[in-house]
Length: 230
Image 1 (spheres, helix red, strand yellow):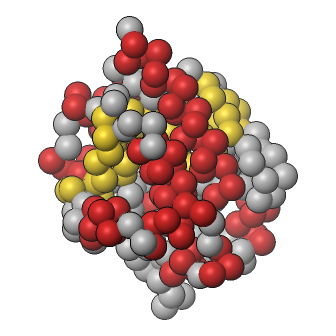
Image 2: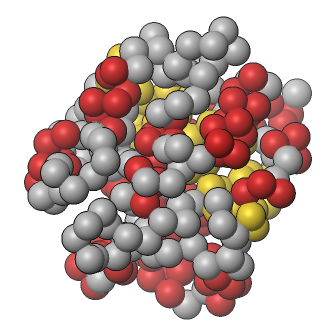
């Protein structure tokens, strides 16, 4: 069971002078949930090399069992420091792809042609594609096999406008995930702010926020296993 993780390479939070990147919980929780179930995971980024961790996600206040495990996991840390360049990845080598969030994807993965084509390839092959929190930003320009926005007519979720307002970044981000999903024709839903909310529509799995990351991974696993057994 080979799964591709795609992380952002972007580390600058707009014009604020602050750093961003991927949200460590949204990587660590799914990473260990899948790894512990026998998955072989490859981590890729647009630029390759070190994937930037959002410093706000690495604080003690944000710590979870998964992030604490990552802090003592030299193997996983080495994989984050030496990610594969996305342009070298072949979708045929993997059963599924998963995109952790953090604000970084809003700036790079949303517009990255290699990422866009990769998701389109996974989708055309009916392989599971998973996204959590801000990661659905990577779907902004992705088309389905008919040439329409991939999320058009699909049930989806992602970081909500109210959650973005709560972290006071509404005016900083290049676009709002909730608005984009709706504009592209997605049937957007959300749960309580910061609560667990995961939506599955065919091979597309989306989670609303960091709290939803582990359930996204568990859902991804449930979708993958029958495909492998076939």
